[in-house]
Image (cartoon, rainbow, N blue to C red; front, side, top):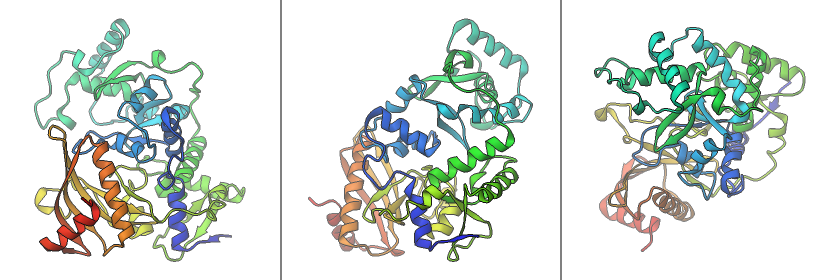
Length: 406
């Protein structure tokens, strides 16, 4: 038996766990950031810094007094740890044991990015055992020739990451954006559970983690980029449905061939209102938008980040950001911050349709808030397009005046 939902209800369910619609849903301060990471299950780390990096941007959108030192403090307090989710991420320390399956796979010979150099990894580990925590820059080996490997890392960096992926090392802190590595036994709190989960336990964890944050999902979405887990996730979903711990949904308006599932507790929240006025400029790696196919069929929003697309083929811009408006996505904006001059550039703004005064006012406030978060003082606009048409100079000036009143 299935529970029928409208597309609107499905969208609402998908957004309710994200913590984007209510101010201070997680509280304030360091504890709020910790609770946000626990709710989200992970916060993706990314190196691109044309605006604030993804992990900072994602938490700033959910914790009103978040600062760029907050995650380092959580790392120092051992409330989060760094490892691989579907990508490099900060994860709740309480979830540590569920990082063990991947660590075991890597330690057993599965390749991550580079082939393992057993002699060098053993030497790097011996140095850390003897000298204490080290950064890649502390290990004196030359960089690889360009084009020989991912990011052309130094062999010592490759060895550090191999040991990190195997679980022999953990990131004990960050200095700037540099990782400081130490032996796992010297970083991991003594009360953390380190028992390897069974395949079923791991699948159950993935199901519950995903659905708490994302409201509803298919087995493919739940097992996203987790090699070999889709079949186990499907089996667990069927078993949990039979036990009444999971609900299968029917959403006729959604074009998906897979079964869609939700937790009963999430469905009980559908009666609660979700603000339709909220406007958020999201990171391309935000948990809410990271699965592009899901974003398309749920919200009819065809989105990709274009920094990996050749410049001549880009449609919207190098680092275009989605704009969430209430229950839907209203457009995208390509931004860049010049930190030296404290100027924030809206290189291109694309709105999907003509918008109400309320939306324009809210978007303007969000742009100003985002500008301040990026350490800038003034906003400078480039091209603006509405409903697929680039605005003429006079119309653009009028819209900018509505966005940022003098």
